[in-house]
Length: 368
Image (cartoon, rainbow, N blue to C red; front, side, top):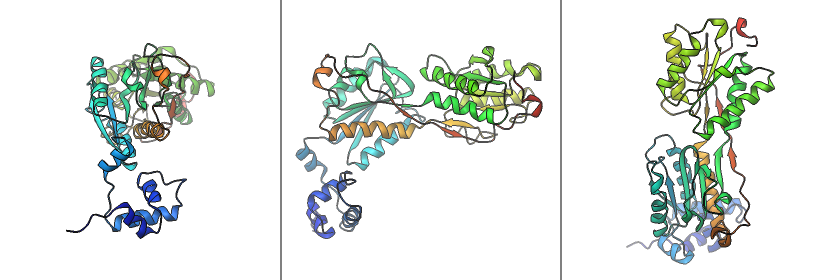
C-alpha cells in the first residue's frame, strides 16, 4: 500500500522548512513565506496529493477548526445564502469548515442554537440575518470569537455585545448612488418607494436618497416618499397610485425597496400604458438572482454585497482566533465595561445599470 505523503515530504520536495509548509497550507503564507516559495509548496502538495490530517492538527492546536453559523432564515433562503457561501469559502481556504443552523425567524431558538454549536466545540461563531436587523445577541457568542453579519447588537444585548464586529452593507451610500444615477439621467421628479420601515435599511436608504437630492439642489416631494413593501403586489399598488396622475404631476422615476417590488412597479406602468424606461424609469435594489437580470426590461438595481459580508465576518473571526481569542476580554464578556462599541464595517453596494432606467424626456427635466 502506498504511504500517504506527509508535510515533511512536501517540505523536502519544495526545498523549504516544515513550518513554511504549515503556514502556507493553513492560509497564513502571505507576509510569512516568500511568494515563490509558496508556489513551490502548493505545487509539491499537489504533486504528492498531500492533504493535512485534520484530526491531528485539531489535537495539536486544541481547536476543532469548525466555525458555527447561526442564521434567522439565511440557510433556508436562496437570497442571503450568499452570505453563508462567502463565509464558508473563506473558512475552507484557511483549513476550517462551517456548521450552520437556522432558527427560521424564531428568536426563541437563538440561545439553543448557539448552545448547540458551542457543545460541538466550535472555535467561533457568526450570526447571519436576512436583511439588515438589530439582534439581541445570544450570550454564548461572547465566549468565543464571534461576528455579526448583516446585523448589529441591540441595546438590550448582554454587556460587551456592542464590541462584536458587525459587517453591514453601506445602505446610505446605496440609496445615494441609486438616486444619483437617476439624477444623472436628467430625472428631477423622483419618488422613493422604500420597503417596510420596520427594516433599518429603509431609513438608511432614504437618508442616502435625500442626500443625493440635496446635492443636486432638488426638492423632495414628501408625498412621494412612501412605504411600498417588499413584494410584487404592494409595489404594483404604490406605483399605480403615483403613475395614474397626469404626466406633469407624476414622478418620472421610481426608486423601489427591492427588485420584487420594482417588478410590480414595471407591471403597473405597463397596465397604465406607460413604457419603461421611455415614460418612467424604475430602479430596483438587491440585484436578486433570477429576478433583476431576467426581468423585461432587465432591472437597473443596487447589488447588496452579500458574499463579501460573509467573507469579512469570517475574516474577523479567524483574525481573532489567530490573535488568541476570544474577541472580547473575559471581564467584558462577563458583564463588565471597558470595551468600547465597535464601529460597523460598511461594505460598499454596487450600482448595476440595466435597461429599466433611461434619460428623462426633455419636457420632464425640470424641477417638481
